[in-house]
Image 1 (cartoon, rainbow, N blue to C red):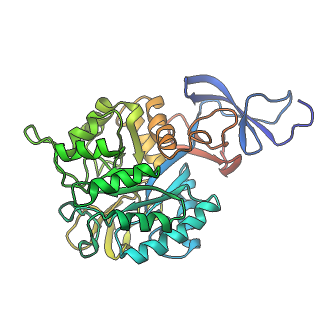
Image 2: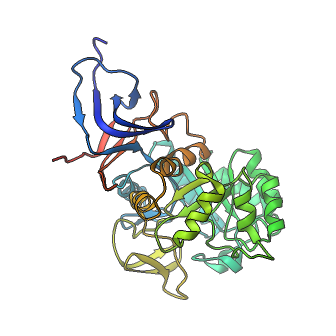
Length: 384
């Protein structure tokens, strides 16, 4: 053990591992990764009475801290990234919104540079290939059918950093676009869709593996016309995104999804926009004006919900304290599952030796008190 430097031992906490929760566990950080052992006398931080969980992974996020990922400079994007890191999101995919194709291509190139720098985990294109019937906070004038050639143009513009496309797969070109994405290892997500049950099954068979914010921006579950929700919930190949902010979903809907899909097929996301971690006011989401009042974001014209102001520490606490979900299930949904979907579970998503030292410290009431990313404290626990 001699000569090992930069080691910190976090001791005494409830530590959530892939195998379960360890009472009075130890987490050993060496440099930027987790280690399996520590020398006698290594510096130690006593976290008795706290929880240590893996850093959160958000695969659907449009901004925060007053900054948007859909517009502005790289510095603006980084401001949003820092805001979410302070709330426990140590890995984040930047999501776009519907726009002109050339504008989106330029945006993807800018975001790709931040991925290559290690600040972002990838790019998610939400729109313009979505249904005008379920457009939500997307500009209808800029919507288009999912032409595989145009999908490929955006994929190429992201220089290998595209992680996911949200598509209304029932539109002309939708199934061919799903097949194209699947062939290139990019997630095809069904969302902002007016598809039938049968059309959704066809998309899953073609390679779609994610439901973009299940329940929202799609037909409701019906007993004669079950629509996309039933198809997405029943298929073991599909992971369903859920926005657990108390606005997008009734607790019963969240419980239904967790019960039917199981913890291994849920990804908790924020779908956050600029106001996350910032406050009420007037914002832009793409070209559309958004009013945020009491933490709820709605289009200034029409009143449609326009993303969220959620941060993942709030989603975690709500899932455990209000929805009464097991902590281990929430950790799976907020860290391990999105890490797996993004193809990054060899590096992130769990507290295991050799992986990046990304973790969140929560107190006994599940409020965030510390965040570490790659072995560096983003938020240092202030204890006692």
